[in-house]
Length: 74
Image 1 (cartoon, rainbow, N blue to C red):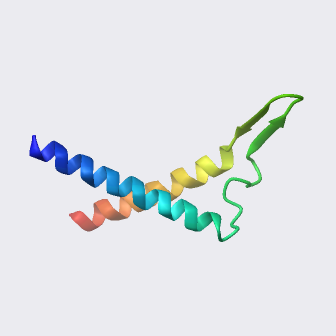
Image 2: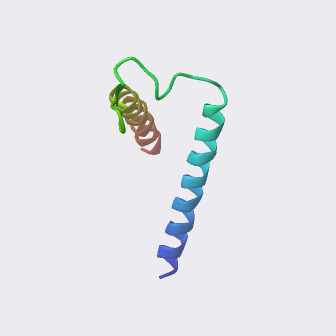
């Protein structure tokens, strides 16, 4: 049971680090979330936002990061 607690604390720390990173990136005025290819529909009473290009970019970056981490652990 103590392993589960350690794992939950680790993932909580990772989530805090990701949150801080997102806050700091928001202050740099990078166009993440407003890339060409992000779909925004604004109707009368609704707004639908689908960050397609941002999702693809994030997926590529995370894939490369996990690939490099995997190669370094061998």
